[in-house]
Image 1 (cartoon, rainbow, N blue to C red):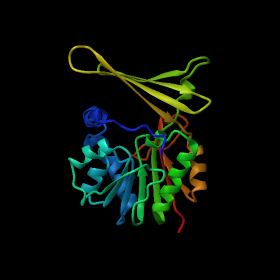
Image 2 (cartoon, rainbow, N blue to C red):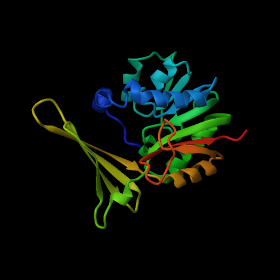
Image 3 (tube, rainbow, N blue to C red):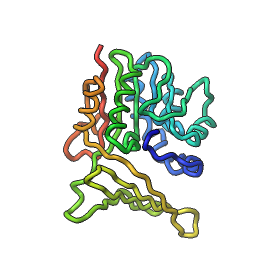
Image 4 (tube, rainbow, N blue to C red):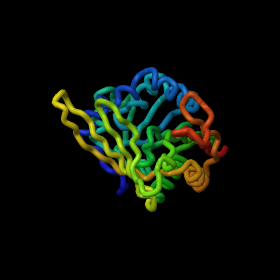
Length: 246
């Protein structure tokens, strides 16, 4: 059993409403263009497809997409948008679940590899991606760079969002490489806040490169965003592409 925390029905039902900005056409277009180009004329497999924020519009763009999703509740929300024949989804964890066929693209977006809370499971995720890729196929991960340089001595918390509707703070266990995202979300007009939190295992870009090497994949490129901006020491996240040798 994966160490990923299981998304509940309540979380799944409100997920899309809380991700309206990241689901907008303006935000998604560079993501879809990037992924569609790598998929080419082949099929794409999305690990942790969730409610289909990326997978559904990528399928509508003409790329055949298959998904793996741990939470049946998240998959049920996706199923309201698109039928099983058009976009098949297998319930299971992204580190070990196998679906039929080969793919030119396997992708994992929005920091979701950190849902696997051990290094061993993250390595198995890379191996599972390689298992599904055709020779020459690519594995893509979108992941934030751990903001540890914002931690002065003795501090373990970094705010990542302060707005009218949401307060977000990450706390860090620097020994175990575990961060906990704390969310205080304003519900309705009564001024009350709902508190949620989730655990993640953060990883550095170089650590992911080593996982890829273990899985037999070669790094092809790393950029700072879906538009292809150069990745630098000041980048807050990276889009990394590894290729399966031919």
